Image (cartoon, rainbow, N blue to C red):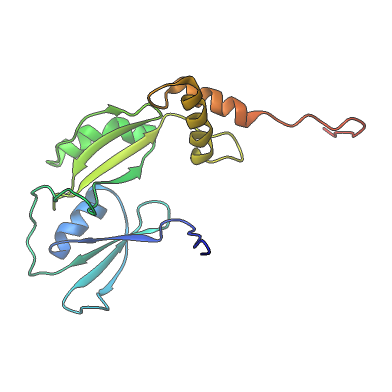
Length: 189
């Protein structure tokens, strides 16, 4: 069987409540612009809101004025979404807890994940969300995934439980090595 190659996440769709609840949370609190809205083309009793989470991709929400917000935590279990993580800058991360709480959204507080810091909170409909902030910048020409792939190999070889700062530092060093010039070639400055 041939592999089907994906090229990233296109969009994620949530079941919302009323339109205003979604707009106030996603655009008002999280700063994700409402790009457009239209009827749900599969069920015109629902509205379909499209938000930009910051990378040009989409978070979409089905809404209906007949649906009321229910803040109880969404059920967990096999086949269910546990949480969705959003990438944030260090500056945003350090302010997130107080800003969420000022709008009535409690959070986990800062959680150290070794290679990143996390902060968990629930949306108005009980879905667990995360703000994630990497502790490193990848070297030029590489992605965060490249660094984590190499750091994982280093961690496993060291017998460590999880990726930590030293594994990230060594991975960045390994990826930053520039090839030696070929003897007999000239380099220009």
